[in-house]
Image (cartoon, rainbow, N blue to C red):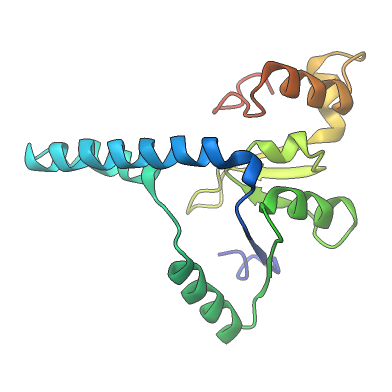
Length: 168
């Protein structure tokens, strides 16, 4: 879809796990496990629709999965990068330094990394929400810049924004 639209993708993969996020990663693993159990129960009850909704929230990308995708990217001449650790900072760097025009992501943490342009929740029809960080003060008031926004996220202990971005 991107290539047909004339967009040259650069796919960025997470690298090593961060030791500082070990407890968070463990909690996520437990949550995925519990979600898989709920999915199995829903499937046994014949509730395939609800099970499919939950399946999206418990996907775990393995090394072998990433390797297959990387091989396919190579075969198709699509650029990719494996970040040293998490991809967020790498993607923000690419955009903020002119190597990419914008990031397509599901992860609102990119805004905390001051990623200038983020396209969120891209669907198969090409729809989503483009967030231009330079317009943040227009949304939240003139005295509210990206530094204050980042500090607010850090101090609140949660860098994730409202899922539907309803305040933008």
